[in-house]
Image 1 (tube, rainbow, N blue to C red):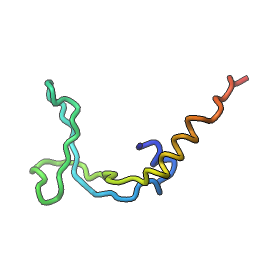
Image 2 (tube, helix red, strand yellow; image 1 turned 60 degrees about the vertical axis):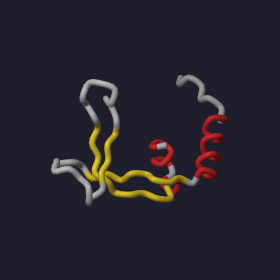
Image 3 (tube, helix red, strand yellow; image 1 turned 90 degrees about the vertical axis):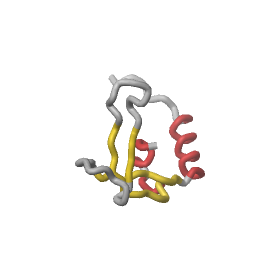
Image 4 (cartoon, rainbow, N blue to C red; image 1 turned 135 degrees about the horizontal axis):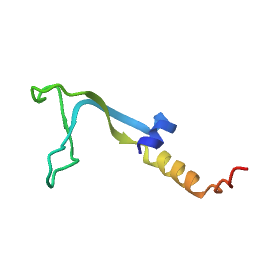
Amino acid sequence: MAAAAWIDPTLITAERQLYMDVNLDRGSGYGDTLTWSDRIKPALDLPLVHAQMDVDMAKFGEMFVDLMTRATPGPKQ
């Protein structure tokens, strides 16, 4: 989704700004993405990110099918 939104940002129909962290503790939660709003953010220095909340699925589906059914480029000479 991130790559598709980079190619065509109009795919994203809603976003929110949230504070984000990634769980690096060893264990079952390793790699979990954690987000907070301004109101409930912990007292940590966290980056403010743009979280993609909704997508135009019809447009994304068309883009995906188009990209996946194109001819594969040949080897460079």
